[in-house]
Image (tube, rainbow, N blue to C red; front, side, top):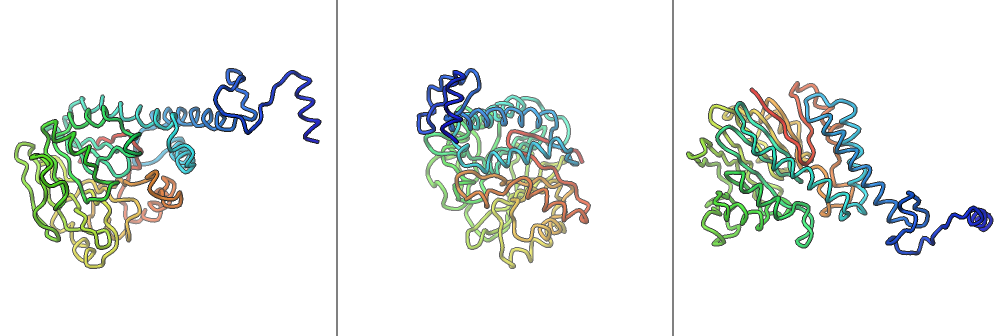
Length: 347
């Protein structure tokens, strides 16, 4: 039967290339005929989908109650990002770098009230007040030869920030090239103990672990409260950044497990007035952690980490949505963001 179908198409003057042929040089691409060119087809589909998703997300920006069009865009993005064939494609790189360029442009806009919170790749955030712009766990993603965030984007961000905080040494949270970009731009980097010792005088290592301590950054009107968290046995700083008279944010890095941590995490709200809590979306006992920090707003991080995990551990946006639905009884709003977006927080 297949032979007769092919013959019929041939009589109609339609050329069907062999599926084994290279995707390069499809003679019918301008007619959007992809028969036999499977790679071309998937690239065309990804390009169209990424563009449509980007447009839908711009039309429906981050907000406390997710409208259906935005939810559909995020779920559609999950589907693209859980197809590993898209990880190193031009449509994906265009999507993420277009969004990073918007962040660069928006960072030039002053904040006159409250905090502006940007979400970058993986668990990276930038928090901007009227006086300070602090980056946390910023990485380029991708490979050394083809990062998701280009060097121009990284250096551009470094030039517009005042400091970089790093929760722990894992490569999906700490990147030496990013740290160098900040230091070479004259910006402070606060790194975990023994990370990048002697690389640059502006890359400062914490002297101790497993101890809570404060760092006053007077020039920025900011106090950093470092809480001694862990990912299993790995020391993991929970950075609580107090923007004086404006608001306080807490980013948890890869906090995971350890009942001894939860014993003090249960009481964080007694010492700190947390405005925005930014946990890793797959945190163990997430609801308990939220109760302990008692924030006014939740913004999760770490969804869709590409390359490092199989797709079941890429932590889809739809999974975060389902998790947060189960926490509605806490009556704490949350905002679900993807890369290259920002949210204006007011007390």
